Length: 195
Image (cartoon, rainbow, N blue to C red):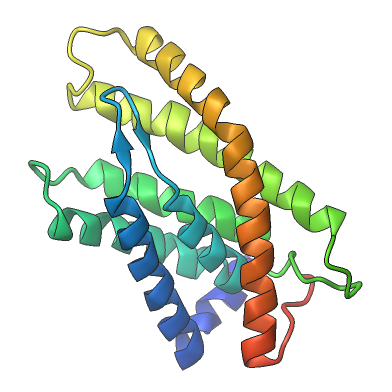
């Protein structure tokens, strides 16, 4: 609970609100370049949500994930609005906020921090399994977006897609979030400390 309370205090910091807004906007831009394969969508918008979770914690990233889904629908409506996807977006932000918040400081001053890399890999794997494979597939099945496919057939197809994409995702999340943390530290002159 302490992590959520600390994260909730970030809403009082104007810098946190502005950076979160910029990262939400960046997520929308990245989302607009996604590739829809029918059974799955390939995009890297999770990077912006992961950065919000890393910098400002689960309370902020939970809200940012929900806002990204709502804004995504308003900017590019592809049919009806489905609130279940908003909850899934919020859950994705929550995952990154819980795993990465104040745990990714580069305490040693080195450009390579194995704890940071392990936490980012864990965060991405949890996101892929919980959000991409389970929640999104179940939501697509619930809303009838899978046509005549069974839930198990849809999950098998998504497992193949996510296994192919996961190594690229891991390389991207580690390199991009380490760069975000370094830039944040340079610009604002402070390090996020370990919780």
